[in-house]
Each structure stands twice: as structure tokens, then as C-alpha cells.
Length: 406
Image 1 (cartoon, helix red, strand yellow):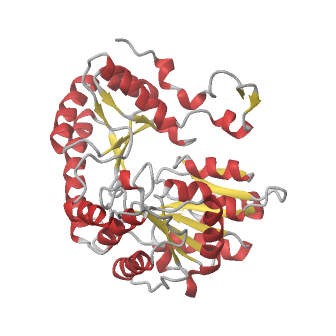
Image 2 (spheres, helix red, strand yellow):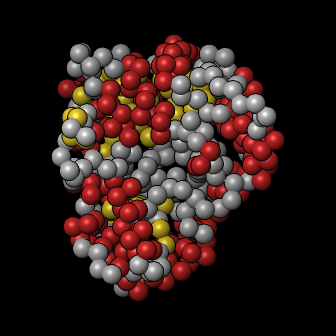
């Protein structure tokens, strides 16, 4: 089965079939964005699978290792005989478990009643947060790093904001000085991500403090995506990557931090995360979410209590991801391709030259990766591999990489 190079460029296309459905006009933002980039790439992998060809899929961050048994047990034990609506605020027990985790991990005390809100994963929380703060009639701006998680821009567009992508330098760290004065003047929200998706680069406390102070000066809110805060190499970051929670003013005024159990605890399918920070902002988001009915089921919250309350399993998973990283790194080193950053997070970020060409060649060898340009400007010339196949599959993929690219 031959996959043409054009089929590897879904991020450059809008949804086919025009801008109407059943005779009705689509939201122009939806028509403009088209398919989610990684979804389109996975469709290419499915074509190979349906053709009976082998595939090792590194395209999306969905680890294959089993969720720790004590977490699944907590969920099963909490399934009620009578199901009732969960609340937007979440169970007090869960908010307390998240606050206790924040204290252990970052040494920061937060009020579980006013500064913590459980979410149905981080993606929906990141997407919907601008809806609570953006005035579409005021030309509010949202700043975000590029390459980066596409949801920063997508949520901003649906909220009616003016998005401003800041193309990152070679170290893939967003700093206050990289954001133009024009963007600062209109900024209502500023997104940062550490450890960074897709590169795994880690911001220092000084990097985060610079962003936070400038946000406070201009009246913008700093939104820090820290969903990978517990996936890092222990030798490189003995105490873990820094957090905005550690550098913010008392009460974490003007900042929100987004956390997730997806990678930390292998709970991608559970859809469970949290927002921690400014109490007034949390209250606004709670009001928004009560309008949309967005909340995790109580039995998922019970599983989340178990997950946030235990750090041992997260450490075990870090060891596993590091082992996978080492296997793949050796293959790219032998090929003379540079692995950039990638000491934290769930990904390997590799400088390859022509990312579309390399993605195409690897697909032909049954290895599915994400071309860097799928994550926005500045990602050209790189590929991203999510460390989700098993260690044995990574070893198999390393041999296939050498054969396909050597």
C-alpha cells in the first residue's frame, strides 16, 4: 500500500465538503481549523493496519501500559447503584487530595475549597478556559508558544480572541522577552507549557518568573500547562521541573496551573485533571462549567483521589519512560540525528531536516510519528515520537529506524 506525501499534510487543509452541513452554515472557526492534526495522522496509521501491515504508533501521547491496579480498583468500588449528577466543583475529597499533592510536589499550600478545581482531563479544560475570560468585542489577545499544543489556539479562536503565536527559539522555551510589545499590549491570557509539548524542554524558575511578572504588569493572566510535571528524568531534574505555583505571589494571584493524571498515572481514558491557582479565576471557571455541565463522574473522581494520593507509581512510570527514551536515542545518534531537549515530558523531539519526507519514509516502514510542523510554526525540521509503545516495541522500532533511515 503506497501512502502519498500529500496525505501527510492534513494540517495544511481545511475540512473537505465546504462550510455547510445539512444546508446550515458551519461555525467559521470549525470550518477554518478542519481536522485535529494528530487525528489525521492516526488515520494514515489505520490505513496501514486495515491493509494488514504492521504499525508501531508514536504519534499520540496515549501510553499502553496498564493503569495501576489500585486506581482501577478505586473506580470499580465507587460505581454506585444509583447514578447521580456530579458537581462542577468536584468532590471535597478529591480537591483535598490534589491540594495535598501540590504541597508534596511543589511545596506550595493551596486552599482546596477555593483554589482547586477537578476537570475532565486537561484538554477540555485548556480549550474551555478562554471562554470564561475573553471578551470577543474587546479584541482580547491570547499568547501561546509555537510549536505547541494546538488546543491553545483552537480554544482561543472559539472564544473569539485574537491569537498570537510566539515562535520559539532553538531551546523551545517561552520567555517574556520573546513576546512582542504589540502582543503584550492586547494580551488577556498568556499560555506557557513546561515540560514543553512537543519538545520536552523545561522552563527554569527565572523563565517562569519573568513571564509571571510581565503578566501582572499588563493585567494578563498566566496559564501554565504543566500536564507533564511528573514525567521527567530523575537524574536531570532531581526535584522535578519548576512550577508557576512556586514563583507566583501569595494566593497565586493572576495565574492558573493545569495538571493531569493522563501521563502521570496512565489514566488517559479516565479523563481526569485539575486546575489550581487564583481563587477568583477558579470561581469564574466553576461558574462556566456549571453552565455546560462539565464534570468528571463521581467514580472517576474516586479513582483520581487514589492516583493523586500516591507518588510511587508515578516514579515507576518515569523509570519506564526513561528506558524507552534511551533505546530510541541510541538509534537516532547512530543515524547522526540530534535529539533536542526531550529530558522531560512524554516525547522525543528529533531534528531531521525535512520532517514531512522523514515522516513519509517512516510510515513506509510501519513507524508512525508526528511531523513537527503539525504543532505550528517553528516545528518544521523536527519529528515528535510519543514514548507510548512498550519497551519491546521501542527496541523493534529502533531497528526499523536504522533500516529505514540509514
